[in-house]
Every structure is written in C-alpha cells, then in structure tokens.
Length: 515
Image (cartoon, rainbow, N blue to C red; front, top):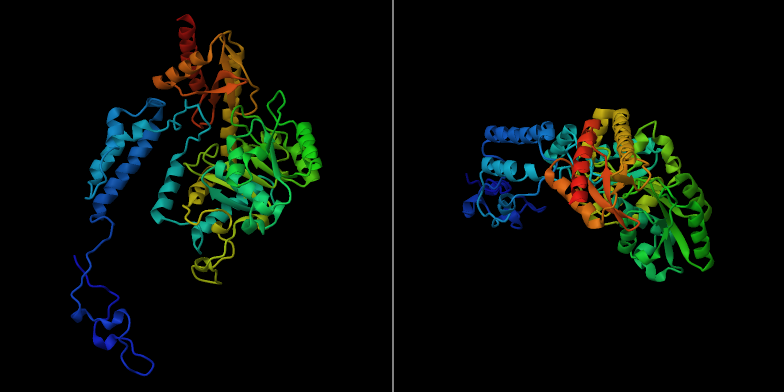
C-alpha cells in the first residue's frame, strides 16, 4: 500500500513560521501534500505474514537443533556434492524468493556439508564444537542487530562484563581492558600494535616507523603460530624483525636462548620491544615457560604477550591452572572462546592489563564519534577505541550466555576430559608396533608417525579416513617428517570415539603397509 511521506505537513497552516511571523518557504516544508503527487511505496523487509514466518523460523531452529542432537549418526565430514556446489552458482536474484524453498535448499545443500567440528570424532584442527546454548545467544544477538562498535546500549555492558570475568580468571587487575575480535590472529595483531605504540610513543601513530631511532625486534619460539610473523608484517615492522627462539625437547621456548638473543640485540643498538609466549602451540600444544619469560621481559622492559588461542582457557580448570603459572604476569593475552569455550564462531578475545595503553594505541577522534554525558553518545571508552573496527557484531552475548549457563567449573571439566583422552590416545600409540609418538603431549594434541611410511602414505591414510566419514584427523610436519595430528577439542568426544578412530586408523595404515 502506498503512503505519503509522514514528515510533510498536513496543511499550509502547519508550515513553520520564521521569527518575524512570516511563513517559511525554505526546506521540505515549503511543499504541501496538495501540491505534490509524489508517493512512496512501502519498502519494509519485514514479513508480510508474521504467523507464517514464525513457523518458518521455528522450523529453521529445529533443523539446526535436530542436526546437533543427531550428530553421531552423521558422517564426521563429507565433501560438498556437485549438486550442492551447483546450488551456489546461481545468478544474482532480482525477485523475492520463497523462504520455504530457500530453507529446503539450506537443509539439503548446507547442513550436510559443514566443517564437521560439531562431530565428536573431528580431531583435525583446534575447532570448538559449539553448543545449543550458543546458538540461542547468536540468534538473539542477530535478532537485535546489535552494533557493538560504540554508543550507549546494553551490548557494551555485556562485553564489559566478559572483560571483567576474564580479568578475574587470569589474575589481571579489575581495571584491565579487553575487546572481542574475530580470532586470536587479530588479537595477536592488536597486541603487537599496542606493544609498538608503547615502545615508540603515541606520536608514532602519526609519524610511523620512519622516525624510529632503532629497529624494533620481537621474539617468539620457533613453534609460535604463523600469525605472529604476520602481525609484524601488517604492523609495518616486518617479519624479518622477529627472532625465532629455539625450543627444548618438550617444544617449549628456551629461556636462556631468549635472554641471550635480547642481550645480543641490545648490544648492536636494536630495540627489543615484544616477546610472545605461547600457551599451547598450534602443532603440538606445548606451553612455553611463562614464569621465566615474564622475568626476562621485566628485566629488559619488553611487552610480554601470550598467545593463548589454544590453551589459555584451560586456566578455568583448577587442576590445570598450575601448568600456566606466569600467565598472570603477562601484559596481554589472546584467546579464542570459539575453541575450548565452545562459543559459536567467531569469538576471539584480547585482554590487556594496562587499559590506558590499550586505548592509546587505537582511540581515534572523529566528529561523528563525539561523546556526551547522556543519550546514545554517552560513555567514555567504546570498543572502537580499543581496536580497528567500528562495525562490530555482538560476540559478547553468546559468550556471556555460554559462561553463565555452564559456569567455569563445567567448562574446565570438559577441558580436563579432552586432555585425559589425549593421554589415552598417546598410550595407544606407545603400546603399538605400528605407530610412534613424535611429540610430548602437554595438553590435547597428539602427533604420531606411521612406522615405515613415507609422507605420501601418511597423507593418503589421513585423507582416506577423512573421506570415510568415520573420523577427521589431520597431518602436520615435525622435523621434516609427515605425522598424524589429532587435536581433541570437542566436549562430545568420549573414549569410545577414540577407540572407533583408532580401529579405523589401524586398519587403513595396515592396508597401506601391505599394498
């Protein structure tokens, strides 16, 4: 139905007057409805039939929940079929589609071909498994369409609550700062920017690195995630200025080698500014000696950042907390709630001990970001002052709901269970003549080789297992050798799942050896 513009006056008598009492003829109000035949068609994208749409929405939710509930009856993973791929090669639609038909397409061509990380025998990468509770949190945040870049609304209060909780969990002061990001790759990048700004001064944000007196140098172990080097590239420092410190037999950074490298660089006139410890390396799950690194960083006045994407949330387990001693002495921590927190993707997070340092690195004045004491523009620090994004979804709500619904003890117990299953798998490997353990098991990642198998055979066995739908491990390279890699992250995984995986792997490896 057409309607006239509601902002037009109903009669000439309603036209605003000037201060002299004369009728104003300026602006939109100089035209009356009688003088204009212009109408505007209704353009709302809301459902024409809310009752019908509610039924469709409930059906979509049931589709997802039924899939999760029956996940054990599904293949762990399967590649998209030609029909599924073809479904997403259509031309850009110009006319409205039928919601029922579109949901049927999602049912047939999306749901069966997801990543697989919901399944308890998905072990290839460190992916969380999600929860139905998280689905509800994501749904509500999407329904409210919260933009958490700034403004005075409840989304920011939820984010501040999670920041406070994480500060408590990691032994940071109550005034600590934090921000949700896509994942730890972004969190590590932001940490590098903060460290750089603290080393060079806030004026370096405008002047850049050209005016730096000495070259900046950062330090991380040779086992650190590749995003650390990328963070230096993106920050303008350059990955050539990342010193890769050797590791010990447990694949942990060697503190003596770290200090030796820092001293040597100081003597040649360079400026060490950042050391990155890892709480759970991506390849093997090793935990760097955080206490020792913290002491070295303090002696040499370096920013101490911890990449805790994989392991930091193990601090929620009282039994495992001691393995991360020294984490509380860091200046910042990157972590992923979408890994061991099982919050739906994505929910990365950066926690920063010095809130002012955090803000100094990113706050950017702009006319459209001015603050006030009340109204929508109220508030001092907004998330856009703490990172690079102004447009931000509300990752905090699904995270808050997950933490509130399960509590830290239950999440911590789930993490303990994963690590116990990893040790069980390692025991199977060590008791077998067919396989050999290739790295110590510090957390939840087990890396082992297939005896007398070349790299192509190892990769072929892993690929066949993935294609079978029984289990989905991955492979990686250690000391130039291709090995099977299992990262046990799923809260649904049981000892029976490990046994099923083991039996299938043993059979495939045996067939490969006998061909």
